[in-house]
Image (cartoon, rainbow, N blue to C red; front, side, top):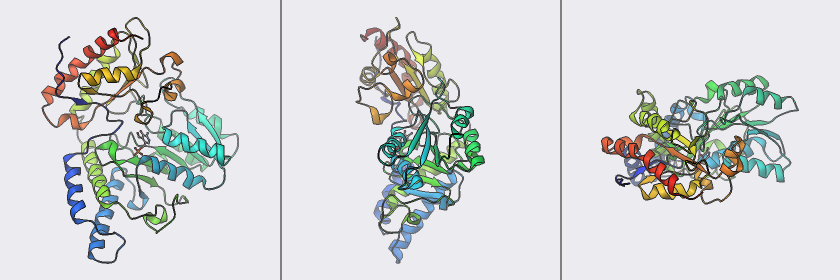
Length: 394
Ligand SMILES: Cc1ncc(COP(=O)(O)O)c(C=O)c1O
C-alpha cells in the first residue's frame, strides 16, 4: 500500500486543540503588556483588570449568561471539583451522576463516597451512551438528592445527553444540576439557563484556546464553598492572582467559537460525516455511541479484524501515527492504561472488546491550510485503517 504521510493530520481534538492564530497573538500581547495584578489599585492593575473582565464577558456571551456567572479556574478538572465539593461541602450529601462521566467528575465523587459518606448513585445509559428521563426519575424517589451531574457530551463515544429534559426534572424538584460541558462547549450551542443547568464546567483548550484555564459557570443563587482559601478573587470562590494572559486567550477563543457557530455547516463537519460513514462500514469495525446525536467532529468505533476478532485500540493508534494520523483510543487521561474502558463497559460492550476503542475528532484547525491536501489524506484514512486491521494480530 503506497500512502502519503504528509501533511500530518491532527485528529485528536477531544484530547486538546491547537490554539488559533488569534488566540496566540492576543496572549502574546497580553503577556507583554498586561502583567499587572488585576486587584491592584493603579493603572497597571487597572489595565489587567479591564482585560480580565472583558474576557469574562466574552466567555459569558458564548454560554449566554451574565458575566458574574463565570468563575475562572485552571481548567475543566478544577471546575468539576469546585462544582462537586463546593456544593456538597464538608458534609456527606447525596449525589447522582451518569455511568459515563469523565474521571474528573466520577473520581471526586467516589473519593467523597469513601471519605465523607456521600451517597453516590450511578445512572446507567442505554447502549448508545444516552440517559433517559425515566432513568433519572426512577432514582429521585428514594430520598433527598443534593446534586445531579451529567456530562453534556461523552468524549470517548461522542453521545450527547438530553440535558434540557434532565434539567427540567431537576429544576422541578429544586435539585442543583451540574453538567460537565468540556467537550461540547464551543462546538455546539450550549446555554445552561435554557437547559436548567445551574453549574456548567468548560475548558478553553478544547475549543482552540489555551491550556491551563477553564471556568465554572454557576448560578450565583447557589451557595458554593471555595476549594482554596486566600484572597477574595473570583467572587471569593477561587483565591489566587488571576492568570490574565490565559483569560485573554480564553476570551478570544470564546468569541471565535461564537462567531463560527453562527456560520453555516463548516467544511470539517462535512468531512466528519463522510469519514464516519466510510469508517463505520469497514469490515470488523463497530460504531460506538449514538449514531446521530453526536459531538460535532467526533467519530468513534471498536476496531477488530475483518474476521471479527477485537484488536487493541492503542496499537492501532501507533500504527495510524506512523501514517501521519494523530488519533486516540479513548480519553487522553486514560491513555497508557491497560484497563478496559469503563465507558465502553457501561454501554454494554463485551469485556473482550472494551480495549478496542478508537476515537477521532476533527475541528476547524484542519481547514486553515491546503484543504485539498487534507481532504485527500482523509480519503486515504479508511484504506489505511483497514490494512492495519488486517495485519495486526488480535
Ligand atoms: C469531559 C471532560 N471533562 C473534564 C476534562 C478535564 O479538563 P481539563 O483538561 O481542562 O482539566 C476533560 C479533558 O479531557 C474532559 O474531556
